[in-house]
Amino acid sequence: MLLEIRNLNKIYGYGESRVAALDDINLDIQAGEFVAIMGPSGSGKSTLMNIIGCLDRPTTGSYRLEGRDVGKMKENSLARIRNRKIGFVFQTFNLLPRATAIGNVELPMVYSGVPARRRRDMARKLLTEVGLGNRLLHRPNQMSGGQRQRVAIARALSNTPAVILADEPTGNLDSQSGEEIMGIFKRLNNEGVTVILVTHDAEVAGHTRRVIRLKDGKIVADEQVKA
Image (cartoon, rainbow, N blue to C red; front, side):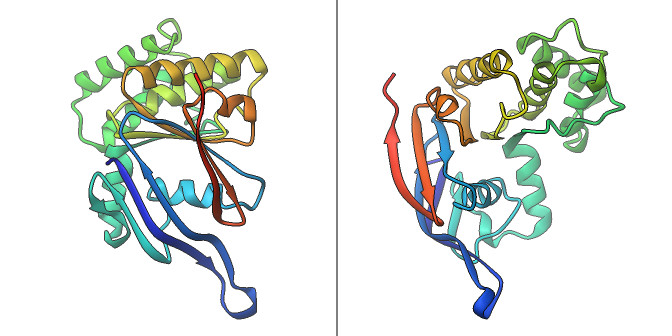
């Protein structure tokens, strides 16, 4: 099992201001799945994504990634997990504005200690695979939103992660660019990459193979999507 969550709770605040962002979550996700997490604002989907991505810790309960109890790890171990096991794709792209496309994709490999020539070759390969082989030296302000998201996807793949987490990955894109980005995710998943995305858009979720719905911090539905 790639990801195992058991009796997980996330509590913010104390006393009368206490809020249960996640309430007794139990969830398994296997390697190779393509999953959408949906829910209204305040449902807990972003909190769940942050815990899955090792950006936050549960208050109680356990989260295991590839069999390792992430909730008990020290911060330096969590940082290594984030860099080597998880590829992040954000709605706002989060690219370095002064770096080229190839420089942005290289960055996680710099932190992992990958030699310069190897990371340059890998960045070029990944950008070519997402259709940006002719944009290697362009900076974010020289690219469209869809192209910037392609750079972000290539960056997320740079350390061959166990899972890609995408937070509203089409939220800032026009419909055509959004369809193209979802096409890339579908291709990656068909190649064996595990993809988990947070979205409020039922049309986007329809591209996945499984939809998990949250409400008030609880899982209220977990359904397979018909092909």
